[in-house]
Length: 359
Image 1 (cartoon, helix red, strand yellow):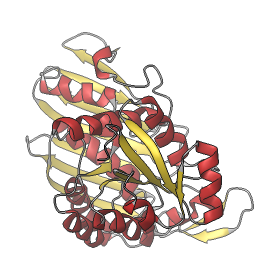
Image 2: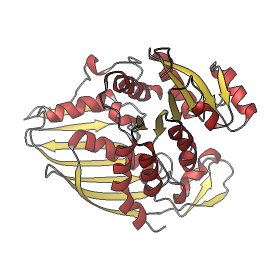
Image 3: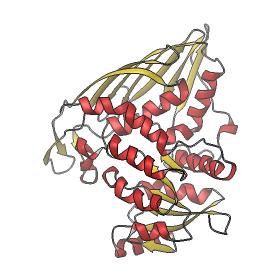
Image 4: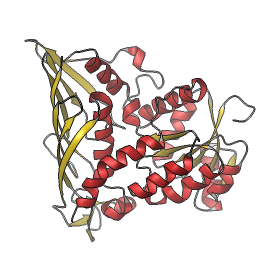
């Protein structure tokens, strides 16, 4: 870190025209004392200059290697599309800088493993923000404290929002499975990670996938395109605890249930509700019942909320909590935020499902 005690942050992929970095990372960083957003890189000198002016960032680059090597940058944050992660994370690791990358770490397990190996002892973090969400951390503690007793089973259904009947110009890359940004890697991956954070590791897993809409259409022009990403994933598994579970994830949205997660135990039940299976970025509510009592909401205690209080509907909310936890990791040596090694383990869990998919 620089002599200034604040962690100097450089974001790769921050645009003047919005996007995930602008809507989630920038507001989160502005809210947390201990970080300074000092640098950004974009695809061209012109777009970098525009983004710097828009977000009041003093150092702007069109080459991410220059950003990574600048002495005022302590933490490099990579927020670009998944196919570009490998080439943009490497310069930061080679410069010995801390790196936070959005999930998925890479387009496939081999490239993710190579990045984790390259990182060595460098402090890394992966953007699995559901692990930082206050309701899900409270849920983890409720389960650990025996609210439902011994967990017997869990069932989850959800929709991915994208990967439905239509696509947008900016998200067309999602429908090509080769890009590594699929219904499996993003909504299913985030959800599987949240599930294991709450209930423990998966001991064995069996899954089926399908692409039920091999041709999808542009949302405005109607132009057809081939979709090779799965739009249906059905998985059954056994947890290390012996509890059994099932997850069904489908693309698009439905007039029915877009997210429902139920955890049943010997003493009670907890139901997790959200607008869709984007538990890393959408508001989540918990509902529980024990014995013969009816299901009722379980408010999250204030102690779980460290930043952006009362703003759970904003994209920055869970990202902000992830940054808050990362700052504790950096300053106290804890390990709340998952590393690249953790990302590789999640990639490895998903790899058999991915490799078996046939559009």
